[in-house]
Image (cartoon, rainbow, N blue to C red; front, top):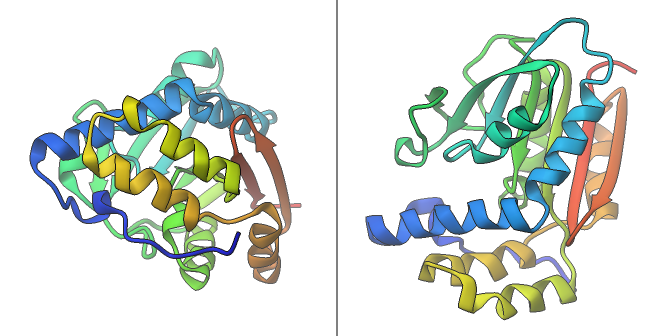
Length: 220
């Protein structure tokens, strides 16, 4: 199944406020019931296994309402995660965390500003060269690691997105869910894209229901 860049309507809020809100709720459902939170929890546990202190700062990129990092923080007894949300659209953010509106490819932070930089269901939106640029920017502003949780492109995964149509609240999701899978990356493609960036250490894992987890460590 060849990767096919596809238009995702939520990227430009191409719908009514109610449709956009419904699609954001659908994303929360995917992460709650279909492995998103669980995968991010495993990745962040792994990335923070050697955390030196009781608190840890995390920048969540393309965060939306910040559901995934909030749920991970609730599940972890230690360290206490201090969350900053970043999104390109203020309408996607909520008021429960520090929030920044900015471009993920030019993060408006100094080097080593956060212990972790994380993203969930974001990098499949990016063309290969932009994915590499994001990885470099995320590494620049992190102190420990970059954690990526994203879809794996696979024909069965695409079929499942169509089978889920009765569950979706918004017509935006009925467009965006299949589009996300079509333009997702495989594990091999992700490895090949990250390899030229001279990242000290990379771990790539697979998780429930066609999720891919990447930890890019700042040091070997």
